[in-house]
Image 1: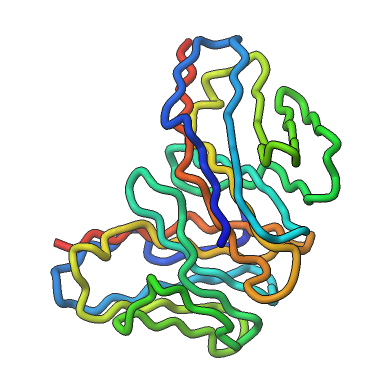
Image 2: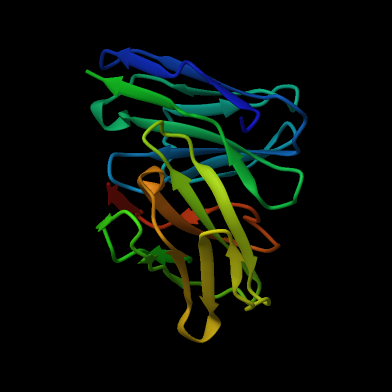
Amino acid sequence: DTGVSQDPRHKITKRGQNVTFRCDPISEHNRLYWYRQTLGQGPEFLTYFQNEAQLEKSRLLSDRFSAERPKGSFSTLEIQRTEQGDSAMYLCAVDGDRKNIQYFGAGTRLSVL
Amino acid sequence: AQKVTQAQTEISVVEKEDVTLDCVYETRDTTYYLFWYKQPPSGELVFLIRRNSFDEQNEISGRYSWNFQKSTSSFNFTITASQVVDSAVYFCALNRAGGTSYGKLTFGQGTILTVHP
């Protein structure tokens, strides 16, 4: 158990709908990261937070994507007006006790029909 | 820009064989970290090892060993006496040791390892 819970594990939605994913670290971690993994590829960085502040966003993160970490603990990732190309596994990670080692949650698999 | 290349898309071995997974990286940073992660069929990425750029000492952990060669920008991973439970996708990754974008991981495309009984 990495101590990172992601909900839901699977999400099926129709094109054009909005979806929201949640990432809950069990304990406090300064840094929280979101990655996206498409089939047959390695994870790709989307964005990260230092406490509540969102410090960097990838060019992969279009205007339809928004992420928050309101209290510096859990984080949400919302995708508006989903497209079929958004189908992927969305992974959340936090820095562990040893700095600069990221521990990942099990991910949310999104399927856009 | 950083880049990680895992040229082996798939490897298939029979149990008890040794197997080496290759990883080549590109970075302009002088200090950086290299990682290996394992992704079993359940999907969760499992951390295996972190190596910093100024420590080229090879590391062994049980059946796992890692060979870091800065001169060739390679960080290869060897499993000795492979077991069926080693079947998974293995990812090599890289990030900066400091400065902007610190912590952001750049992953390779992964190598699918299948160990047959």
